[in-house]
Image (tube, rainbow, N blue to C red):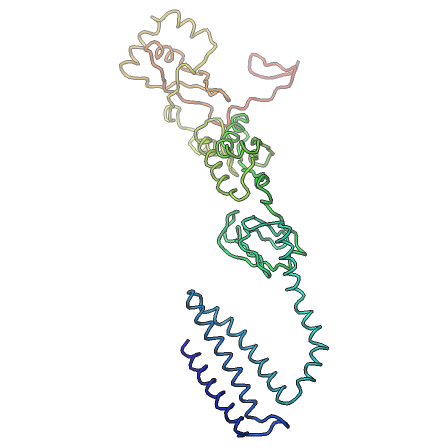
Length: 421
C-alpha cells in the first residue's frame, strides 16, 4: 500500500506544479490554439492521481476485511483500463476534437454497447423474474440437465446464481462445498429442475439395489429389504403415507432386488447408506438369503465348493441346533420313544464321552426347522438325557434347497424318479 501512496503523492505534487505553471503562463509547447503541453500533462497527472487514489483505497478496504490479494489485482486492472480511456479522452479534448469523437461514438458506440450488454441485460431481467416468480429459492436444490450440474442455491445476484455443487468431486448427491457461478442469462435457455419447490414435494423416490442368489428365499429377502427401509424412513413414511416396496429382475448371476422408497431430496446418500447397512447385517444373520457375486454361484456356496470333496463329514464344522426344531416322520423315532430302555446304553455312553459324531440334517427353506437324515438313535439318546441343543451337520447349505420342478399330473416312483401319468 505504501508504494501506491508514494505514487499518489508524487502525481498530486506534479499536478499542482503543472496547474500553477499553466496559470502563470509557462507553457512548454502549444498543442492547439487554446491548449499547451503543460495543460495536457496536468490532465494526465490528474488521471494518474485519481488512479492511484482508487487503488490505495481498494488496498485499504481489502486489508481491513482480510480479503485476498487477488481482489486488489482484479480491481487494479479495471482501474487501469478506465485510466487509459481517461487519458484518451483528455488527449481528444486538448486537440479540440471532442465534438467529432462524440458524434462518432454516438453512431457506432451505441450499437456496439447494446450488442455487448445483451447478455448482462438478459441476466438482470432473469434475476428480476426469478425474484418475483421464485421458481427456486435460496437453499433449494436445483439441477441443470444440459450442463450436467446439480447444486444447492447459495446466492442470487443481478448477474449470477451461485450454486454449492452436489457431487462432482465425489460420486454422490452430497454438497461438496465447491461454488459454481451460473450466468442468469442462461436461465432463459436451459431447463432447471427444482427438487424442493415446495415442502410437501421435497421427497423423491429412490432405490437401493441388492443382488441375491437364485437359491435365496424370496419372501425372506423381501421382508428384510422392506423392514430395513421402514426402520430408516419411519418419519418419512408417517409424513407421506407411502410404504417401501420391491421390484425385481433377473441378471446372469442372480436376481436384482430393487428396494424403492420415498426419501429426502437433500439427504439421499445418508438414508441409502443406513438402509444398506441394515440389509447387510440382516443378510449376514439369516441363513436363507445370500448376496450374489459374479462367477461364483454364491459366496457361501463358493466357499463350500472350494473345500476338498474328499473331506469327511466329521471334518466339517457342526452347528448347535435346537432339538425341538428337528422333525422326522419315520416310525423309528416313535418306536424308540415307546421303548426308552433300547437307547439307555447309548445315552449313558454319550453322557460319559459326549456326542462324538454329530447328527446329519437338512434345512427346510423358509422355516426354522430341520429334517433328520442320519442319527435317529443319537437324537433320541440326547432327548433321553434332556438336552435342548444338539450338534448337527447341515448337509444342505444355501444353494441345495431348491426342489426339482414337477408339473401337474406327475408322480414319483419308489426309486425317486419322476414320470408323468
